View 1 (cartoon, rainbow, N blue to C red):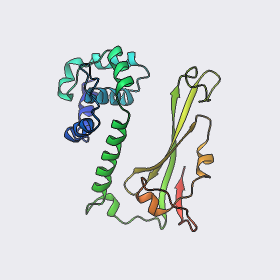
View 2 (spheres, rainbow, N blue to C red):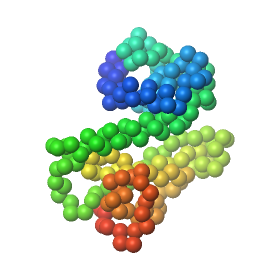
View 3 (tube, one colour):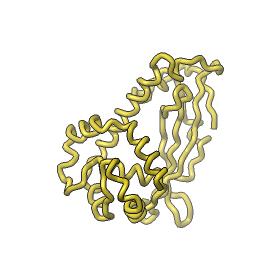
View 4 (cartoon, one colour):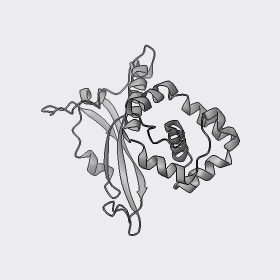
Length: 213
């Protein structure tokens, strides 16, 4: 657990706290704070993702197991009720803005001299990978997310650009949809992959892109 917390703190260093707090102020996201900051919520959910926790109880117990080492992360262990409350009352737009902020920051770093993106790649065509992750959902609450007989899920199909290994595009489907099915619907252009947040163009002549599954 000591090693995990140490690695966890190193991951958090990639996320500038001042920029995060700036986004919080823009949206007035802590209007219904009840003593729980957005940073506490964010770190707790990142812990959930990296620790493969599947419930609020697992998040609570996991944080309490290393409670004495949380002070350097800027948080304290939250109860299930507090986590449930902030999930209900915090604007989701905050974390959307944080994602765009981090994506732009890392993309800019890859264009610096000497970065991986500036190195010559041996493939003639642009190389991207399409892979998917299954996200479990409660079938009783999300009856449209068909996956198994007693299990619901959605599938996140992520297109990874090998020039810097950053995500370029994602498609969310129900859990049963295969990657190949999604790949057949994509029409890719280099200009769009370089700026995935732009409106996708109508490609009369799509440039060749090598795709790996």
